Image 1 (cartoon, rainbow, N blue to C red):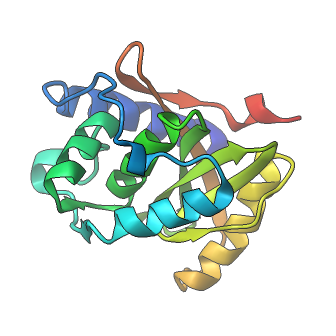
Image 2: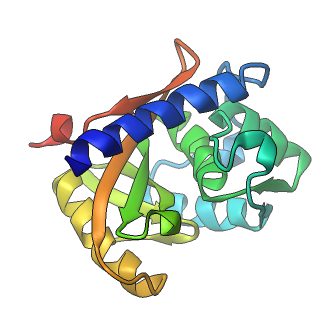
Length: 191
């Protein structure tokens, strides 16, 4: 039941974000060479550098509480500096840089028992290992996406002092061909 409603909410979030930001930059604008990464160490350095040009800012009422800005738009905003957005906005920026570095990546939602304490991060696959990126931290790599998610979920509750447990994780992909966010199933990545 939780899985059904969680996927429904993620689908709505994608639809709303696509609609809300329909006039933003949505096509792939590439990245500067300094914003590319090919190794884990380069990804770690990249997220720290991106974070230094980021100011956490809650989504306004015009976003009905929460919407994801397309990765190309957030990259363009970052080039103007600073990027003012929330967790999904920062990780949307990282998404754009990793995607343009040829690294498979997705936005990952973490929904605890108290859903208002939810969070959006990034998960990526590099050299056959899945890693979670939460702002400037890259968590250890795992052989499967699910293992990386399970490991992060445990730390998330402690790091952010969240009571209860994680009840749902959702996966969001930005499709650079259709220029839209879409929900993905974590179960599609079981290996």
